[in-house]
Each structure stands twice: as C-alpha cells, then as structure tokens.
Image (cartoon, rainbow, N blue to C red; front, side, top):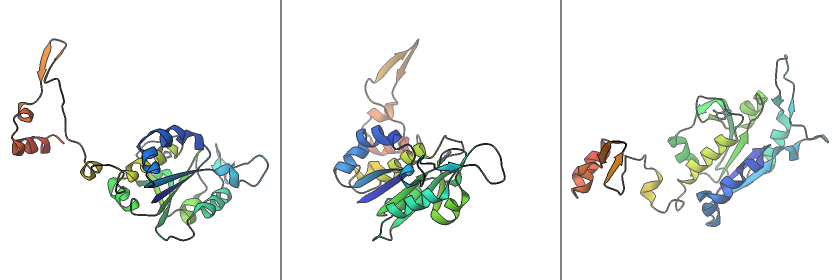
Length: 210
Ligand code: ADE
C-alpha cells in the first residue's frame, strides 16, 4: 500500500476529492491511503501560528520551519526507507510522468503544502527530499498541486486502474456515436478509417492523432 501524508493548513480542501473520486475506491481497496494533517496541530502557541514576518523585511508572511519540522517527523514512516518528502513550490522541479512512476513504487510520500508568500528556505534545504512545481504559474498554495500529484501517482499503483494499459495512455483522439453530426451548417462525419475494421490502419491513424 502507498501512503500519502498531506501536511496543510487547509485539510478540508481535500475532502471531496479524496472521498468521491477514484481515490476513494483506491483507498477502499487498500491500494493507497491518504492521511490529511492540519499543520496547526504542530504550532506551539495558543493562536496556532504557522507563519511569521520575513527576516530582511518585505511584504507578506513566511511559513515557519518548526511546525513543519515537527509535522514531518511525526508523520514520516519509522519503519520504511521507501519514503519521500515533497515540498510544493513554484520554484521547484517540474512534475512529470517519470516522477509519478518512481513515486508509485514507494511506501510513503509526504507532501508539504506551502501557503502564503513562501516557506522558510530551511524546509527545502533540510526537510524535503525534493521541491516540486506542477507548472510555470503561481497558485495560492500547494494543495491543488498535491491533489494533482496524488492522482497521477495513484493511477500507477498496480490494481488502481482496472486496465493496466489505460493507466499510462496519453490519449489519442477518440470518437463515439453518432457517426454523423450537424454542427451549425456543417455535417461532420467521424474519420472513415475508424469504421473500417482494419486494425492496422486504425493503429496508424491513432499514432498520427496523439
Ligand atoms: N505553489 C504555488 N504555486 C505552485 C506551483 N506552480 N506548483 C506547486 N506548488 C505551488
């Protein structure tokens, strides 16, 4: 079983996603397990503060290192070495399918979801194994990134997707009924080759329409 441990100040953002999607089925089948952790649990004051002003000044707040350090320690596997700690940041290495494949073989992936204007750099330097971005744009935080990565990785856990060959297919163009459709003034037909029954030709057409 692959365990995901998500450290976030917004665990509720994940609720529908993990309870309603294929991820719910994956959990029911005990192929994956998603644990949501509220970072504030590891804050050490009565206001449960997890951010502070940046040294050197400037606008915005920075997520503090100690609560994250305690959280990572508390949730990290004490028995398995096949585990990774990922910090989400727009400054990280771009996530791709190769990374998803590697992580699907682990026992545990811990996600640290950054928020606010940044995270104390010691989290990236000393606590995370990798800093990961899901693309060249800036989100409000790492929560959506964590959902995307969890979904891409879970699909590659054996048994998660019933048809193994579907799990990694970068889809080609597809059509289903009706064979003909009127859109505006145009009558559109699906490509004839797909109705030909000639499997070799169909494969060739699909290769050309990825
Ligand atoms: N946090 C904010 N923007 C992000 C991005 N593009 N990828 C991962 N985490 C982020």
